[in-house]
Image 1 (cartoon, one colour):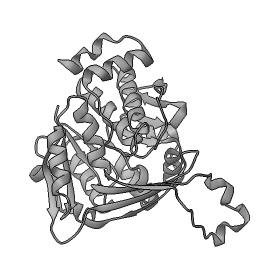
Image 2: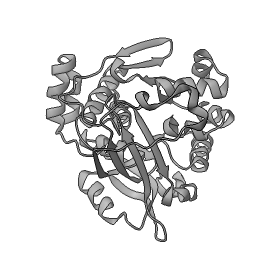
Image 3: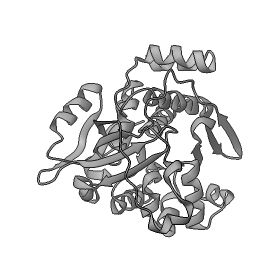
Length: 318
């Protein structure tokens, strides 16, 4: 199964606020909100939804193809991904622009306030699967230029390419009709708990309505784990135990990566979910969405520590 990952390619500027945002937000002044948070630290990391997902798939032994647009500052980043086992042949460099930039501030409760600069991502709609990532068996359409996301959905629908619809951070930019178009016919819809509520509000669809339109639903719930729903079966996936909680940026991408790698290996859905849960924990323990490292053997050992022995995971080291 050839996995193709679409989404943003960006540099992440990660900041830490040593307090809680909620303590500085006045409910009766939301119409006039004006806040500045003095942060203790900032770091620049490789990021973007597409390489975040692809990086963890590669750690798990897969060789995903990324289809995306990047800026003139991407050459070192490309070399890094290729060294890790990611196929970058579907990444097109836009020579007169820079990579997108993601600015995010996290508080003590791991709540986040973020801004995103489009950069080279604005050209993503110039790409298509037939030309830039032929032979795709399973695609994930993760946050990207909104026009490109819709175009990729249409191409998958027209050419019967199985796809995971992952609107997540772009839900605020997408209207209800676009969200319905994206999830209808998808193999999976994946969102977090809050994003699922936004999807329901914007589309007017109930959970049952959504499940009539997509092959399966994944709802991540942070420290409460995740829920996988498919064909009237509901799987409650527990979280893995972190060794430390440092920074949450990219954890959702890692969850999707683990889940996709499980699908690629034709593992049961509960195991796919646990692969996602453990992958996410590795990210939370580091400062940056691509700073975690593990071998398949190390991953299996930690899986067993959290969820018990699972002989089916021997395929990761095959």
